[in-house]
Image (cartoon, rainbow, N blue to C red; front, side, top):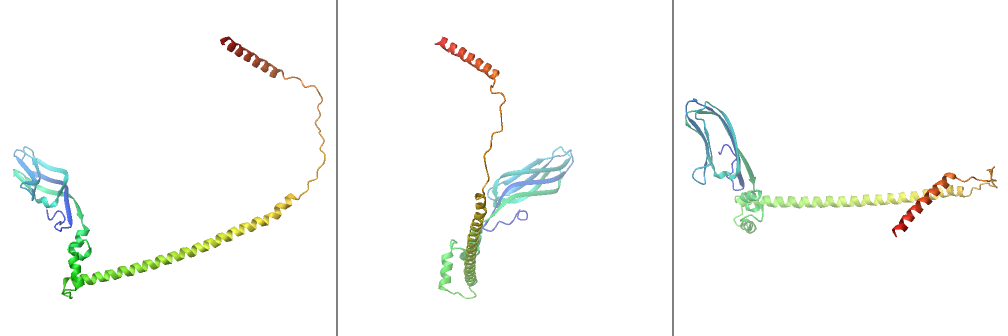
Length: 256
């Protein structure tokens, strides 16, 4: 297993197995019995964390492929794996694949490398006290290089913050300058529009001051016949409407 899956011996590494697949070819006499066992020992308990039986009895053999999926099992429980033949037969071209998930706790990893990596690391107070008191702190002390590196990192962070603050101030000044120029342009644009409108006033007044010559317009339409005949169609429609209203009214009076 150590050659198949990544090393998870470090305390900040968590490795879990959640799947397994295998393939192999069985060669045997069809008249004999043969069983193939695929197993992984369970390091936490007696027995096997995985065990699969393939019975080839009475068959001429062949190639088999299988895939298994199960709940996440910590890799520390997966012991030595094996493919064993019970009875007659020979296994060739065997391939065994494990599906796993690996998580790395970065905080634990930093604290394991040095307790000065973070104030929340165990032993940080003792290590810091040793640095401050400079107890036996010499170039040969293992904390000396860590202290020097911590000071260099602190100076680098301060320099980066100063540069970032200067860049932010320059950006704010630039935005203010751009805002002032934009405001002047807007004022100039409004003033220019106002001047254009004032210039158009004289052109408009010229239309108001135009005098149009007029006079008396005599009527030219003449009617030769002074008697206009009645519209008989309209009269018939009125009579029909009157009759209809009378019928409706009589029906209403009858119901009353």
